[in-house]
Amino acid sequence: MSQTAFNLPPRMRARVQRSGQTYYYYDTGHSSRQEIALGPDYLEALQKWTELDSQNQLEDRVRVTFRHAAQRYRQDVIPTKAPRTQKDNLAELVKLLEFFDNPPALMDEIKPIHIRQFLDWRVKETVRKLKEAGQAVNGSEGQVRANREKSLFSHIWNKAREWGYTDQPNPCLGIKGYREDGRKVYIEDSEYSAIYAKARQPLRDAMDLAYLTGQRPSDILKMTEQDIKEGCLLVQQNKTKTKLRIAITGHLEKTLERILKRKAKYNTGHVDLVVNELGECVALKTLQAMFAQARTAAGLCAAEYQFRDLRAKAGTDKAELSGDIRRAQKQLGHTSIKMTEHYVRNRRGEKVEPTK
Image: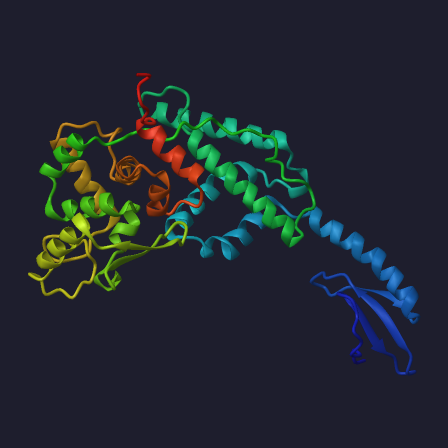
């Protein structure tokens, strides 16, 4: 019996019998290829198909667990993100599955209360492990990571709705995460100079580029000689894909001249602007280790001063020196002025005039 070429709905099959009459069947989709006879009348068969397919889809959806949605998200969505975001998401998935896959949670049975329970569990687990390791705790450890994992869960859920894995509303709605104050560190000029004085030359190059361009550490390390074109330093931010053309003038021009002059001593063929004393590329972990070493030598607190804080210093100084926060917004690549205001003013405080 051969299947006819009718334009049939999914899982509906049509076969011509030896008698010449066409019969319709419903394919249940099981591995054993079970089929249910729908009869020879197309309209009646279509009505039966509607009833069977609705029930079959419901049964399929009921069997879908969070792991199914997470696995598809890992396969289809995470690879489209920036490298650092991919790394973070994969680590976050581990914790989500530790909670929502032990035992496997059916998508249609996950409710808002379970999101609240996850947040509480995540913090308690972090505190417990730190205590077991003999570290001092204040009870709030793990809150930031819990918030990030909740955000990932929410995005997975929204994608699962698109994929037809569930038609239930997002259980994260209405569930507040933990309060985050964000970093408020502003590296003063004297502190910058103290670290700079103890830094190796590769770190000095990276610090100058970070401060003068206002870009993230990962974007600094991927800057190359080929990015210098028509009097500008071309940047495409890893995190947001925002493109910038930073004019090569003033201190940036002198910095690039110094870097290129230093690189000319080496014959390694590396085009990266930030290279070590052998002319080789510098990894992010290596850069952070250099910064930590210089910071310690300068007698500064490790928790309060990180290389990434140079981006906030750049934005803050740009806003104050230019008198226009919009110029800082453009340099940082922020999509809204509100984001820049929060980013800058939380670091140093808004500059105001006295009453008289």
